[in-house]
Image (cartoon, rainbow, N blue to C red):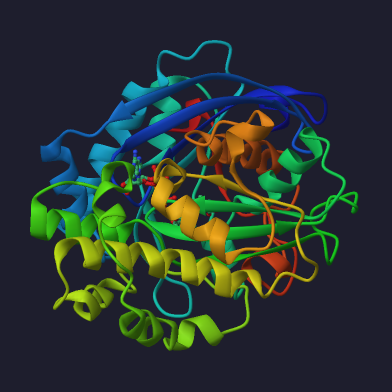
Length: 370
Ligand SMILES: Nc1ncnc2c1ncn2[C@@H]1O[C@H](COP(=O)(O)OP(=O)(O)OP(=O)(O)O)[C@@H](O)[C@H]1O
Ligand SMILES: CC(=O)N[C@H]1[C@@H]2OC[C@@H](O2)[C@@H](O)[C@@H]1O[C@H](C)C(=O)O
């Protein structure tokens, strides 16, 4: 790797993320030395077609077999298309698509072939970010927290704050920017809060044939059913101490809790469950955060944002309020993490994934190795 990016100084890293909502590939450039963020560069997006989405969906929850291979081939191809147009890139960080995640069981599986991507792009590619952490006893997720720490420094934060990602699953990072480095005990605490948009999307699809509750319009017309909410919060996951992580489908059966409700009450209740899971999770923060910065698609849902604001004691704002890009933060995270991997810096620690030691996972594939 030394010959690819050198041992120090800023490099131009391109990160790519294919998230749990299966909508497409996000791509974003970060200028960094693996410690400090020096700036953000161009971004891109390559949507999956409906047909491609069903290929990915067929692979979800599987560990091997033709469905997994088909999903992997598709993910590699889509990333070649998404990333080929970026110029001046020193290094690529390729997350791939998570199909299955069972950290204390069969492991974690992100499909997509980083070696083939390196050959196609003619650039070094860092990939398979999660496996080493899981093998060493960690949750393998979330991994964005080390990047969130750098973001907290980039925005000049001096007080503890939280980053909240509301994708299919929700994840929270508590950052204390008073520390110099993210791996110092106390600097970071991170975990998946619970299901976020995935159950709402699934119910909208099943009942109304729509992919999401756009603008929270359906939830706005409904009422949260407190009995269902209480049953949901009784799930043992919420009582577990962090770090902890989830698979997209871990709470799939929660839709059953709202099966008797009207469409609007059911959507309002699932939206309320997402907010309540976050509020419950916030109790684990070592100190009260000054603000919660929200990233991921859930920040576009005003009903969800209002529910969060009502249940939390500090301002809840989209990350755009501090000049970050909430649609690209995960892609930027894997750009940043790629540089850390290439330079031998850790990407997870006990506070972020529960792993026993500092881990800098990932495979580095050079273009001439394929
Ligand atoms: N305008 C909107 N109104 C309501 N919900 C929205 C809106 N835009 C996006 N969302 C929700 O956000 C979801 C997409 O979020 P995001 O792109 O952060 O997911 P992801 O990155 O694939 O997930 P993860 O972070 O779990 O991997 C959509 O599926 C939808 O539920
Ligand atoms: C196993 C896996 O892919 N987990 C994702 C998923 O999507 C959100 C949440 O669940 C988080 O744990 C993680 O992604 C983010 C980018 C992370 O690792 O920080």
